[in-house]
View 1 (cartoon, each protein chain N blue to C red):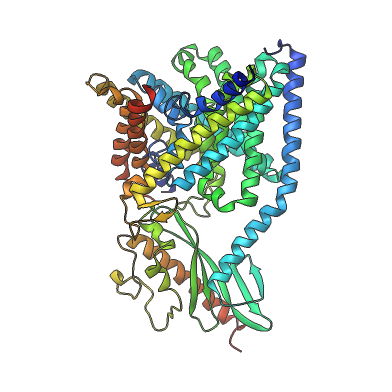
View 2 (cartoon, chains in turn red, green, blue):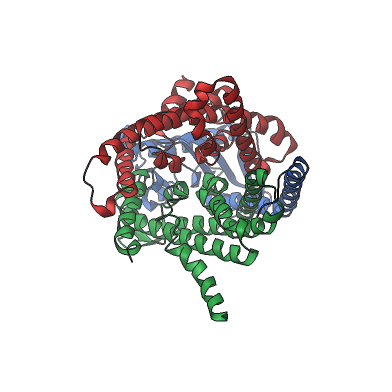
Length: 199
Length: 201
Length: 185
């Protein structure tokens, strides 16, 4: 039941892009075409889940026992940067086809604040639907995975909208990013309908 | 000659405000822009927090850039930026705890704000310490201005007040503007206005 | 501009940067530790002072999550922390209860309610003032919609219910403390 609530909450109610405003830069940057949007979502999904696993363990077994949680930010970003690099190298060797699909998006992910945001959220935020408030490792992983699915969902919907927008005659001052952001606003209005469904 | 130098320094700052405005022209740092501008004060605080990190990291990076080997320059820069961000976190927790709670997650996320790393890459590693500080100041001010304006617009529309001063009596503004969708809508329309009136000239 | 890379200088520069940065932060942490603790203590003290009448000493009970406030020999009351689930997430209150079992005042410690709706539980004076001197033996502790005497915040029944439940929990904690036989001398 908890897992179900975590998933619904992370995908719809607290959608990472439309309600939490994380990962907006790549969201606007690569959502021009449906195919690139899908590729990026998959890469983000992969990295967020992996990064959450590693940072959760580092926090739990290194930073907390040593009493140096104030180094959280610096430790997490280094871990994420190193991880992204490693994933890139490993993928290149192990699965060239997956590397081809995700490759160009991987370097961009280091500075995607969604990754660091989820990693920090998981270890600091209190969630009302789990007893005790803090997520355990399994819940943290489910949360991270579901959040990135929410990211993918928003991304794919938005890419679809943008492909249609490109065909329309838009006033000059609205062209490009402004009209895109306004459309995201309307999309966010739609997602607001989910608010309060899971606390 | 001296006047020229003064002019160019001044230009470094104004460039950051208008021509290279991080929010409306370069489209950098969108996440904090949207998330923390629920009121003018919040926007202003977030802007100043970013300004702090931007100026200091620009200075530090311009100072160490000549000795940093090319292949590891990104990790080194990130460590430097993260250090200043953590410093800011500690200072805010100690002296402005209420604001630290309001801005929450977005203070540590300054590390991945593309503006900071972007300026380090595009400017600080090629220029002197003084110039880099001014560049950081200019871009930081530009960012602060945009955030304050966006925060002000959302606050006026959403809760009928400005900088916490309520002028409609009661707090029944158009709620949607304080919530997530309003952030996108306001930013979109402000960009349109910026395109129409400022960018052209 | 940048120096040429080779293994020695890469390791050296990265290592030195990390070392220097951790040293700076360690120093900053030691220096800011006290102000941070002071700021946190001040926040709780301010919250307790708001929900209880004048007192001189406070004693924290971490297990029961309550503060026992005394003025010299006399018990002034308990400031009890309680958390329930509101509309947007956890809603944490501190509730001041005087020895006669009457709520002296309440204050929100943290919340995640919708701005302009549920978040009014920290600004709506009509809603907040009704808790001042709320006597559970005279008034019924549930919102009017559910047949009680609590005026809900307009359009925010869920937040109001959560708030009411938090006060109820605090009163329950108070009741167990009272049974312990410490209070009615």
